Structures are given as structure tokens and as C-alpha cells.
Amino acid sequence: MKKGTAPALSSVGPRALELGSKIFVQEVNQAKVASILSIREPFNNPRIDPRRGRPPPPTANMPHLDYVLHESATGYALFKVVHQSDDIGLKLDEVKKAAEDLSKLGKMINLTSYAVWRSAAEALENIHSVSEGLMTDYLKSTISLNVPASKKAKVVLGVADRGLAGNIKAAFPGIEAETPDTSEAVAYLLRGIRSHSTALLKELREGDEEKAQLGLGHAYSRSKVKFNVHRNDNHIIRAIATLDNIDKGINLFSQKLREWYSWHFPELYPICSDNLTFAKVARYIGDKSTLNDEKLHELAGLVGDDEEKASEIILKAKMSMGRELSEIDLMNVITFAEKVQSLAEYRRGLYSYLTDKMSEVAPNLSTLIGDVVAARLIQKAGSMTNLAKYPASTLQILGAEKALFRALKTKSNTPKYGLIYSSSFIGRASQKDKGRISRYLANKASIAARIDTFSEQPSKKFGEVLRGQVEDRLEFYASGKKPIKNSDAMDKAVADLLAEGDSMAIDTEMVDAPLPTTTQTPKKEKKSKDKKDKEEKKEKKEKKRRHSEVKEVADADAEVEGEKKKKKKKRHSEA
Image 1 (cartoon, rainbow, N blue to C red):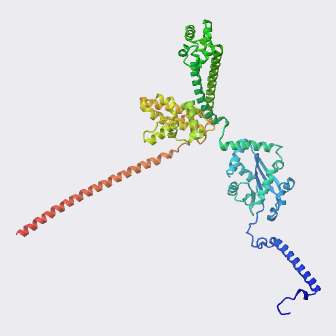
Image 2: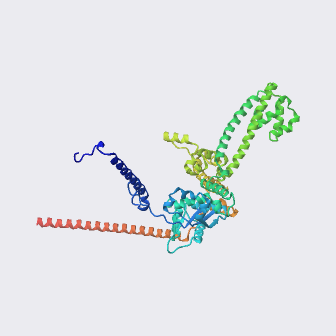
Image 3: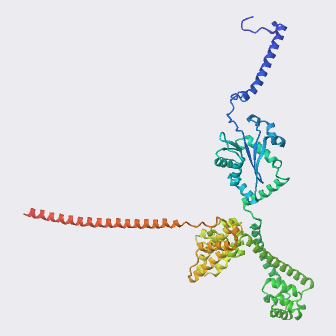
């Protein structure tokens, strides 16, 4: 056999083959044991990660928690952490599921303090602050009383919100705040506390937590969206649209009723000009041949207690030139008159509903320009909030978009008013002052809309004051009488509200802070500076003028001397 070549399989004996196979099996077993040990090796040597073939990323050691803060719907709960798993144990599913078991969770934490809300308003205020990452005085006092300060090391407090954790660390230098983003222990402990809050907070009864969550959730959401059921402007938009359609329907049906009944009693048409009155009288009379003097008082009640008009109707019925109607035709006419009358009565009720709704949603705007005009403005804008966001110039021409775009296209004059033209103020103004009063009215309507939208409980006081300002402006255009200033008018409205004790209708931000007495001194200084600047400018002008005069005199003297020298030279040359 040559050197470097493997022996043939036939030349190897069976004993050698059996021995070689045993050695191969031992080597395979040793390789398996080494691989198992290498898998467990990262717990002893974190620099090696045989499963990935590269060193794992560096991880900071998780600090040991001392306390956990739980913000519930009933108050602040502060728990002391008695037992906490290490970093490796937190990654195990058994440890994570331990928070779901109340018996195991109770061994990890103990209730230290439970600060219950003293009122619903306080609960809403604290939850608002927590959601924005702010710390209230109530929470600050709770932490300062129950979390002891340590001189050796900082106390670690687990908090759910990251912004709140930053404010706590800023307010308490001896406290280190951890969040679920920075500590897995905070995440699973807070999860367990939320799951078993009723059992951990022993002062609560069954169902108290759910009721508090429901009430506080509704209050928080309502305050966020600023939605009030009684001030929903959507009903106003639907009501004014329905009112317009009903008006069209009543006018159409009344005209058809007049034409139909005039075949039987044409003399009634000019006597009853009102549509509703005509429908009532036609329904009451029916067949004109049955009308006599005995029905005078009842007929007078239908025409506004006017006996002369009632007697005229009876007289005209006796002398009528209308044709006779059959019983079935007369029955259909009377039925149609009943429908017109019921529709007119429903229209009256709908208008009353719209008036009441406007007094709740936009009392100041409706007081200023009227219920119907204010409702049409809200309908055109889409909502009360959109109307409040519009500038006065947009509100002025709201409803005249076609005329505006036509004017822009043809480069002609733009319209001066839109829907506010229906207001009584513009009708009372002279022709030359209609544009001026429309701008002024749009300005006041914009102010009224913003007050109605952004005040908690709007009152009519501002609308009455604004209406008085428009009246004064009309008088100013007519006679030249100087109107009251806007600031004085607003101060008067606020003073009236405060005098009536209606403090809920005024936001504290609406009342301007009193101006300090030192605000007038800068104006004086500014005036004195302006005077000094003017005087300096005058002095500079005087100096320039004097300098120019001196220069002109010097130039004139130089010219004279030059002429004298020339004359002397001529004389010398002649000599």
C-alpha cells in the first residue's frame, strides 16, 4: 500500500470496523454536549451569543423598583414593591403571567397610600393634568407624604406616563421615575394592578371602579370635544331647512286651495288675504248655501274677532256667483283645507322650537340679528364653530357667493351684504349707509358668534349690548351723535353679568386683568424722545442752512476778488 492512500475496505477487519464506529459515536455525543453547553454559556459569559454568532447588544441593568403609582378613576394609589424579579426572570413567561394571578401579585406589592378624589371636578382636573403629563398639587402632596427621601440612593418610582415621570423627577430630586418604556417591571406591575384594582383597593366595593370609570370617561371626553347635547347646532340646521321647505309648501298649497275653492266661492279670495285664515274660513263654511247670520260670531272668531269682515263674508255668500259643487268635490276641498291648516300650525310649532333652540345655542347672535337670520348663518357656515372661525368680512357676504364670484370674474364691485341683508338694521339704514352698517353689523355678529361658541353658559347680555351698539351706530349715521366705545360696552356687559351673580357665564380668561399704573410712563418717555429727535433734526437743518449761507457768501467774495485781480493784470499789461 502506497503512502498517503487509504486502505481498501476489504483489507480492514471486522474488529477494526466495530472499534471505529464506537469512536465515531463518542465524538458525536461529545459534540452534542458541547453544543448544549454553548447554548447555556451566554448566562455565564454575556460576550458570546452562539445562537447568532455575534456579541449581543449591551443592555443596562434594570433598577430595582421601590414604589409604583397607579392613577385610577377614583384616586391615586401608591404601592410599595416588596419583591421583584431580576432582569432575566422578567423575560420568562412564568414571571409575566404572575401579575395576572392575584395571590402572586399580592406578595409582590403592598398598598401604601390611597388618595381618593374629593369631588368629581377634582377628579376631572387631575385626569386632565395626568393626560397632559402635568403634576397637580394633590399628587405632589401625596408623593411627598408617602415616598420617603433617601440620602444614600434615589427612590425609584414606577409611573405610567412619560411626561408625568419627567415632572416628578424635576419636582423631587431624590426620586428616580421609571416608565413602561424604560422598565419591564413597571409594565407588568401596572398591568396587574389595573387588572386587580378592585381587590387591591379594599376601600372600594364591587362595581365602584366601573361606575367611576364610566362617569369620569364621559366627563373627560365631553370636556375634550366641548360637546353639549343642549347646544347641538345640528338641530338648528335641520330645523331652518325644514322651515324653508314648509314655507314653500304652505304657499303652494294655499294658492291651490284658493284656486280650487274659488270655483265655489270666488268672493272670499280678496276678503281673506292670509293663507291660514283662508284655509280656516273655507273649512268652516264648506257649502256657502249653509252660511247664515247665526254663524256670525263663530265666523268672526276665525277672522280675528272682526264682525264687519264676518258680516261681509255672509253677505257675499248670499250674492255669490260661484258654481255649486257636488258632495264628493266639496269633501275633497275641505280635506285639502284641513291639510293646509295642519301644515301651517306645524310650521308655527317648528318656528317656536327654533326660537327656543337658538336661545340655548346662540342667544347673543339671535338677540343681535334675529332668530331666523342667525339660524341661516349657522346653516350656511355648516356649524356654530365654523361660523365663529369666520372673519367679519366673510360673515358679511355669507350667502352671496354667486354675486361675489361674478363680480370677481367681471372685475366689478363686490356685494356689500349676504344673508344679513334680511336684518332689520340694514332696512332701516339709508341707501348710502347700507354698506357701512352691514360691515359694522357683521363685525358685531362675529363677536356674538364667538362668545356663544366658546363660553360655557352663554347669556343674552352681550347680545343686548351689541344690539345697542348697532342702534347707536344707526343714530350716529343719521344725526352724528357719538356712540359708546366697544371696550366700555363690553365692560358694561361683564359688570351686569357679575352683578346678577351669573359668574358661570363668564370665563376667567375673558375678563381682562387691570392695567398697572406704570404703563403710562413709557408713553411719556416715548413722547419726550420724539420731541428730542424732532429738535435735533431742526438743529441739524439750521446748521446746514447756515453752512450753506456762509459758503455762498465765501464763494461770492472769492468771485469778487478774482475779478479785481483780473482788472489789475489788465492795467499792468496796458501800462
